[in-house]
Amino acid sequence: MGDVTLDELRRRLGEEGLVLLDVRMPQEFAGLAGAPCDPRQGHIPGARNLPLDRLLRCRSAEEVRALVGLAEGAEVIAYCHSGNRSGFAVQVLAAAGYEARNYAGSWHEWSRDETLPAESG
Image (cartoon, rainbow, N blue to C red):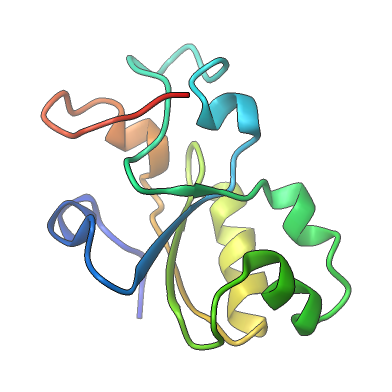
């Protein structure tokens, strides 16, 4: 499977069994910081925040699964600001047994469409 597109994520948002993982820093997730090029700050509704640096400190697949807290095989879509950090996260998640895909457009793309929901805090 390839990267997740904006249209696919828009359709699947809130879908049972789908986990949306925001791998940005907590300040970005909360909307307190972010790239000035983005018209809105915050996160995609329903997303969980797990900063990439925490994920990369794991030394084994077992540590990754304990940190993420999902059953092996869970479907995860990761995103960040522009798809780079989430690309790394997808590799780590896949190696730990998750069905993981990258939303390459990430917050940079999502924040530009005013019809899409956003949360902060």
